[in-house]
Length: 502
Ligand code: UN1
Image (tube, rainbow, N blue to C red; front, top):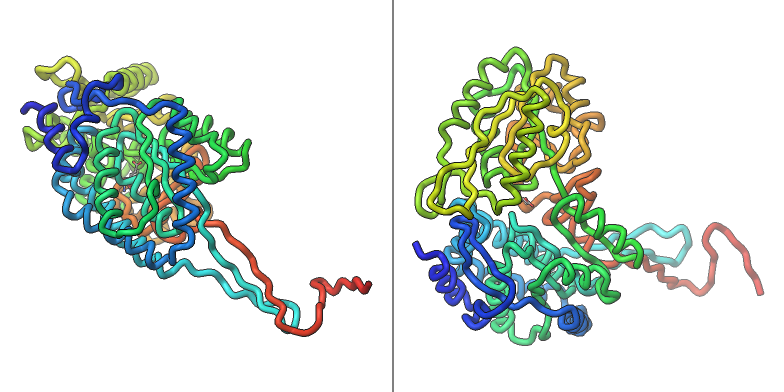
């Protein structure tokens, strides 16, 4: 398979001009082979600022378009995504290394959020609130906010953009997107797909979606630009720790979706067959490179010797390889740095008494592709590196005897994204979901930590950043709220009984 040729052909089919793929100074690689697939031209800081100005102009028109009509644009985007699903899914596989069903699943997630946002475009409801004064009415209105900056990561190169863009657009905002440097091609494809939807829509303002191809300095232009009132950023906790304070300094909003160090608890009553499958997908799926990947597992001592050997077998036998050429379930790591990070975590785990199954690099013809066997590490207790997120397929397994202690250990890490309990005991399940249970933004019962549906709000607590994207009422983060009080009486009573007679 000539991956560079196929990438160019896919991009052309998706509507990207071939000329932008060659001759630039920013090489783009596929983790499937490590080979180069394009040379893009990064945008300059000056042009990035201009693109943001253009998006602000577009916003000023778009905010006056009725929300249900704005929904029509997102409906068309959903239609274009349906038509492009096979090609875009394959491009996601080429650029991010995902297996075909996950590449397609990512596009399905985009289609789903478009459907959700179309419905939402008729439901941007505010409250009517009882006023304490006679002849007065109080209400809340939700208004468009402005340019929404989106910074996305390589591991969900297009779905996370669409969560933000679909909501932002129906909410009356424009979007400026800085994709990961590791996955710019899928972003260019989305830009072309969006352009088709916009042209079918007819009178959408120019510049509603801007894509900034570039490095970190371009991300900084977006974060610091005074015309960007909200930045939604997905990536490492380290990135969030830089972006958050910069936004706070100029009182801009942040939606941060950062690291996860997600855990599961397997209780004595668990359905072990089901738990096994959920754990296998959660920990090894997407080669351990989801922010929701299962990274820690607490197994009750009464089922440990039943479950863990079966899990070990699954780790030893799972197919690893180029998912577009073989039926492999585990594709490559994104790059050499990810491989190094994985090896250094495994060395630390070994030094801390961990017993490791897997973790080794697989032989391939290509030096620059990093295929690894997922690692299962039995740990005597929860110490570093278990307490840190390593963005690779490592599952640390620990034995527990006391449920309260397991919950305490579950919560004793910096991140707070996703979590799972496997139990048939309703007391344990409800406790896990309660105020003194899991401290994560996502807490599941009898399913894994990854693979959330778009209908719920997505995000997490603590070092995960606190932001919420996608479903439920996450849209409120993309609008500004006004409280309106209307006096339809002939007098002017002041609130709280204050008198001020001039
Ligand atoms: C991410 O890894 O940044 O819940 C997003 C999931 C997907 C989204 C993951 N729906 O695993």
